[in-house]
Image (cartoon, rainbow, N blue to C red; front, side, top):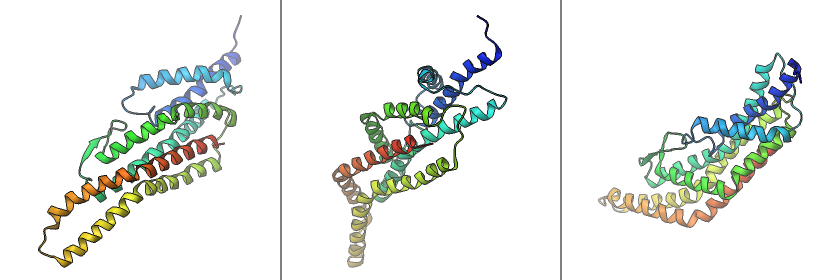
Length: 252
């Protein structure tokens, strides 16, 4: 059986374009894109997923002399899908950093193994909590399922990221800050009341050393508030993750 150049182009395109979209999503998506996971493992995972997805996807457009542009489009689509879900974790980091600063724990830093940067120790705790929520909700499976569905709504090699899609991703950035506010609001409001009370005490008793008394009390009350606000925090995380998956599924 002889295979000509057009047939070879079609065979290469059938697996190449889905591979680039899958690899781009795995590079940015939470859990898959962690620095702890070696690049070779991500490449092998992308190759395996591309081999499974390609027979399920619509017929891929043959690679033309604009192959670089087609590959770039697939990379943009994959990065966009992973970036939307990753912003949920960014919202958690922003919200937990705000809580840590209010509690006086902003100076306690740890290296985040997911990105390799320094974050407050409270942020690291919330990242672990969000990762467990992500796995408990089968987020990794849903993300792969959404990736498979994207080849039907955005066929490989024949789709261009529309202006509406870009605007959807930009608008989703507002949800990141809104989610951070929802996560931090209960603790920040409670600690604000505590700080106002300490301000009143300092005016009533100027000789009292409030730093020695107020700092440990603020940290202790902060942990108490976090304990009682966990149900609200978990509900906010669940809503953010579900909204992120819905946003990714609606990209077209």
